[in-house]
Image 1 (cartoon, rainbow, N blue to C red):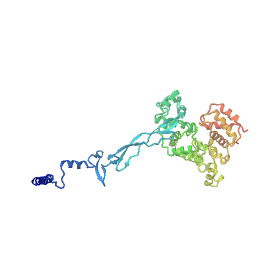
Image 2 (image 1 turned 180 degrees about the vertical axis):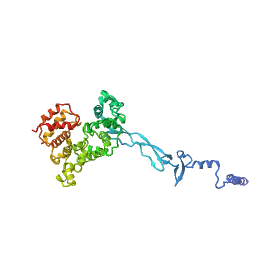
Image 3 (image 1 turned 90 degrees about the vertical axis):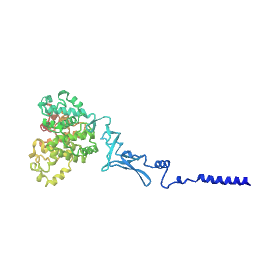
Length: 447
């Protein structure tokens, strides 16, 4: 019994002793709100912002259970709990006509006031067969023509072929070159914007205006040319950019540069705006003869003055039309060739007082065949006289209308002896002035 009692006692005592061992000591009892060192470390490790630096440009915060960054001024939150004010993105592909963009990464910047900046445009390269001139792509074949035209302009306007800059003021700039090596030097320098402008301008000047040394020199400073992009878009839409010797060139890029050069040439005399307006009317009807007439000699001014200024000289109003409105309504129905014939008839040789007598106000419906044949004879004998290639149908038609205008102004019929015209031209060197050549038409007998 005692042994059992002792065992039970020991058993009970063991149980009690064990319970007493498991009970916390009063001194070690847990105090609410406090953590021991290991538990504090565990709690710290659960702080979601502990290792978030926000790129050192912001403060980590927890909003609605989500960790985010409150960024400093002029920084913005980005993926990966970062604050940034710049990033690399794809460039903006915006190559000019006849070019391809060269993709690359470009940096954009952020500010609170403006947001992200726009990406920079991509670089670009011209398609095969084109070359970069300033900010355009132009046909490679155009370059020798530009330089050739420019050098001819220098030779024609500067004494001694432009060999001495002192002989012709600013026109014969040594940086472009002069004399027999002018074209070679010009080609080598076309990557310089000022040289390109001057070369194009000099060539355009040679084809559209009376050469004057001061005007060639003025090509150094290009004039503002509003409307050139729109004009060249319209010319492209009319399929008129197809030949390198066309006044506006053989591509959109060349067209814009030629238009800007035309503005440089004509703005100082106040003639570019009438040309631009006239060209816009010509392109609205896709009339190439009208376009050529707008951009050479003085026809834009005449086109605008048919029903106003010259009415006093010609008696068009009131003897031909009852008022200006009726005149303008009739003129609006004319093709470019008919306008050319009327304008030329009024202006040719200054025969203003004869235009009523010679019936300048009634142009033929189509270019007269004999006049077209005479024009072909003239331009074949003197191919550089007007600067437009005969292989273009509308160039031949344009010259034919010029002959028709000369015949009208001279009081002649449209039947002329083409052989006599050719003989007249070939009897002397080709003149520099178209009017001088057309005088051969007036001396030829009628068939």
